[in-house]
Length: 336
Ligand SMILES: *Cc1c(COP(=O)(O)O)cnc(C)c1O
Ligand code: SF4
Figure (cartoon, rainbow, N blue to C red):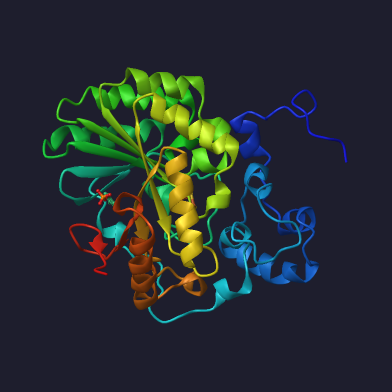
């Protein structure tokens, strides 16, 4: 094999990385040297929710291993087609919490702006896999009604950019959105919920860093990383750059059977996050979304795991185990 050197192998821009993502099960299965017998089920499941994963993320997977914890998060499988009691289309009541196009407002003092419906990766367990983004996401012209809503409700101190993934919009549109948010006097905090720095670290551009240095809003970036192997050297460098620009970095992850439901895996995840200047924030129980039941870890097992985690790690490295329930006024902490 030709050794990788920087001159031979330039990192593609983030847009190229998104454009060149794997979207076909064949291409992914062949690239990872997996058994082609996986394909019929992958195709059937991908018809419900498409496969999408950038090569940057695939290159962290182990070739020939169908149980790779990163692969399990993105490969469509037959189990997704099984209907399971209690696993539904809109498990967290998002459709009932939309007071203006592109806004989800469920909790006091903070409102979520659906910046875009797009994501760099399709995570099989995602609670939004059935979400009708086309109708609700705030497009260029449609941020206005979301901004009007935020401007009217003076109880909102924090705006949460979410989606989809808010870092899927261009730097100039992001800058434009931040300017509009900064003009709302009662907003003091900006939170960005994004998986992009983990999936495609080159998304952390100089322009984004400049915006973070410049904004008057006190900024928190909540990344989404489920396994220590997601944290490559490039990812850690990108995270440290974000932090160096004054943003507080937190991580949320989802507890997933076969991916990160072992004690040693969680310890490695929390410690690796800290090395990258990120504090664990939430560990979510799976939202009971149709098609994701095979990822479910029940509450008892999750409690035990977190109790043991508390014994192994300092308190500040233990994420809070939570779940979301439609109609509640906050995420619900699971007592250990
Ligand atoms: C999860 C969520 C939040 C943020 O909750 P925190 O506990 O503040 O992290 C805000 N709004 C909506 C609609 C949410 O789903
Ligand atoms: S990046 Fe987040 S919103 Fe997008 S598919 Fe994955 S879990 Fe869902």
